[in-house]
Each structure stands twice: as C-alpha cells, then as structure tokens.
Length: 238
Image 1 (cartoon, rainbow, N blue to C red):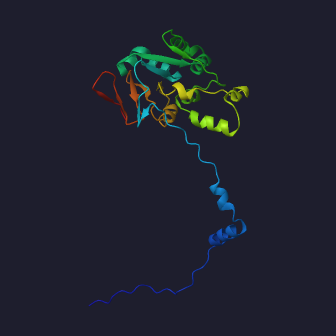
Image 2: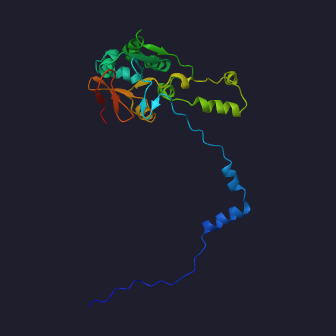
C-alpha cells in the first residue's frame, strides 16, 4: 500500500493588525461624527418616469408620427435616392411628419454649397420647423435634449428648496424647457453612430435609419415596433 500524503506544516502565528484596520480605528476615534454626516446627505435626485411609458412601450408615439430629422439623415436619403416622407410612410405604414430643428437648419447652412440640395429639401413646406431657444447650433445635443424628459416634480422641488418662484427662473435668464409636456412623442431619424448610441440609452424613443435604399426602425426597447392598424410586428435588425 502507498503512503498517505501529508499536507505541509506551517507555524501558528498570531493575527496581525493591518494598516487599513488601524486607519479606520483612528478615523472612528478622531472623527466620531463622520458617520452621522453621511446619513444626513440629501436624497438622490432620481428623474421621473414618463406617464406615456407602459413598461417599455411608449403610448405617446402614435399616428401621425412626428420624426425629428438629423443632418446626415437628409444626406443619406439623397445618396440612396430616397424621398424622405415617402420612405418614412413605407417604413411605418402611417402618415409621418418630418420635423427640422433650427440647429439642423443652421448646420446645413454652415456646410456650404456642397450640401445645397439637402438644404433645399430641409426647407420643404411639408416639414415642421421646431424652434430652438438654447445657445449654440450643435444638432446632436439639441435632439437629445428634446427627447429626454426632465422630471417637472423634481424641478419644482429644487425651486421650493431654494425659496424661488417659477417666474424667478425666467428672471435669471434661465430657459425652462417644456419637457414634461410634449417631448416623448418623437421618433429620431439619424444615421450618426454616436447619436444613435446616446438615444438608445433613453427609454421609449425609437430610432429611424437608412439602409439598403430604405428606412428602417431600430427600437431600443425589445427591438420591435407594433405597426398601426395591423396585426404584424416588424422586427428590426440587431
């Protein structure tokens, strides 16, 4: 028979107090009120959920659809020889109203003579013009701000905490965006990878993009869209 293997023997030593334990002990002795201060911190300002959202389905998006069009979406539609309004209607099987913000129009004007066709399309009277009251003409931030809902209850809470009235914010020259009223009713049409990545983090905002000479919908909730007046479900490509 073989001999049983024995484990290695180690000398029994006393448990040492580490420097981290000493540091914690000194902090507790020297500053005993530190734990009380941590408990008295203000609660987190958690943004409110839109009343239009039922789980991950946005009930505010219904025909006629309002689609915010980005600068490069117009350029891609020209390259793919796609009529904007017709392509949107073929995608969603319902009436669509393209919307152009002032920032998108300003970007097209800055691009110069090369993008004169895109500028002419953006000035189509069938498109709705959305005015911008903020500073700057960066379209990506403008579109993200429009589809991001600000909790109006939290805004009133901050106003009450500071002892200010609603009209005082306007007196300070601060623009109060009406996110709590309308901004969960848009589809965003863009082919920009960075903008799509930012919008996919916002629940209940579908993304429209152009591929293979046609417009497609990419939803950030379950990757599907229930079409109006139809029993079919359109699955977007992953």
